[in-house]
Image (cartoon, rainbow, N blue to C red; front, side):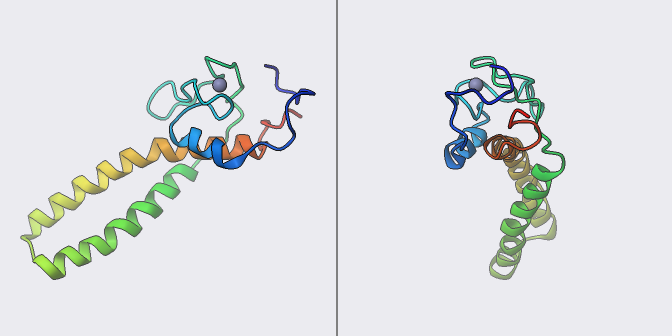
Length: 130
Ligand SMILES: [Zn+2]
């Protein structure tokens, strides 16, 4: 598929299905091809439908959203655990460090996929074909 808008493709791209496909790290166009070629590296084109994916400019967006979400989950959780259970400081620090890293590693590629899909659906940064 070339980058221009074809006569058969609708001008509006549906946001919600694209975001779910991106969250699953799949191509926002077909939902089948893998979007990433490594942990966070986006492929230039979809290997299934040949949709161009190199137009994305996710930049710091996925990291920003990951920090926002992880912080808003774990900051209240650490206060709640401390006030209710008073664990040993090293137990608390170790547990929440592992939880923070694990949740961040889980969310980061999924949020990047969703941001790339958002840009694709909104035809931002060359996804529109101009
Ligand atoms: Zn595809």
